[in-house]
Length: 80
Image (cartoon, rainbow, N blue to C red; front, side, top):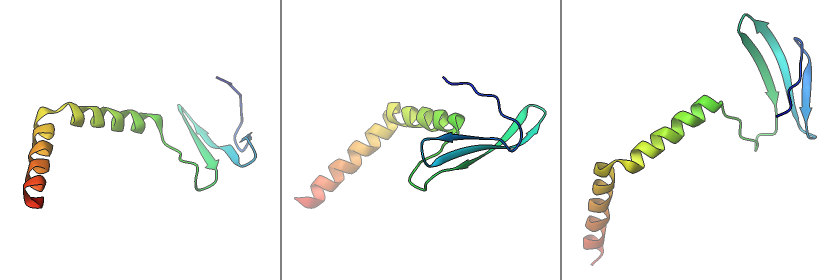
């Protein structure tokens, strides 16, 4: 991991088309601005972790799997 120090209104360039700028500093919070192409996905890590956990919970739930199996069986009966 590369660690850099930046002051308010200073930026970091990543590649040719991503710029990260320190917008504001206050207490324990730092606001950053990210200028990147629309095709670059940007996510907060805590949200990604929460979504991953929800996906794991959903897949591991027997009732969801059983419900899905029932739906598939119902579709197969309709097609025959």
